[in-house]
Length: 119
Image (cartoon, rainbow, N blue to C red; front, side, top):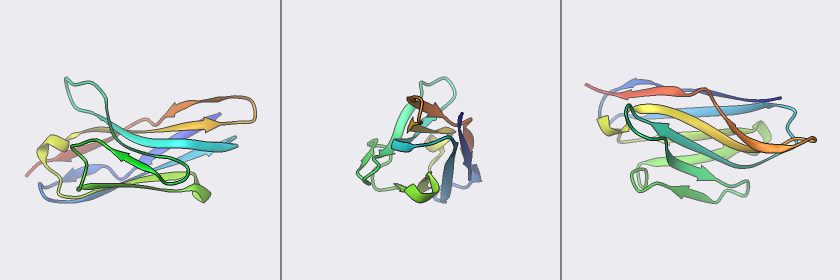
């Protein structure tokens, strides 16, 4: 069984910063890509950023220049540093990981963490 646990969400003023963390636990053999998605009310879930096991990154246009994704492979953890936040960044943020166990491989999701940007 694999679980992803997110932390770091909250309420922040426009222009502020937050750092999200997501740790994977369980019977993990290897983690390939990890990523962050978000879903705002009334909108579809969208990719924010993802990162390969080797550290190659990909960002949505809305995240470029403001957000930084990183990972610690030894800790099976992915981070999202978010700067210059705007109200348009308000959403539930979900982490995602492509996990290989000794029995199978699959895509796992965290439970989500709320990020609210408001004055």
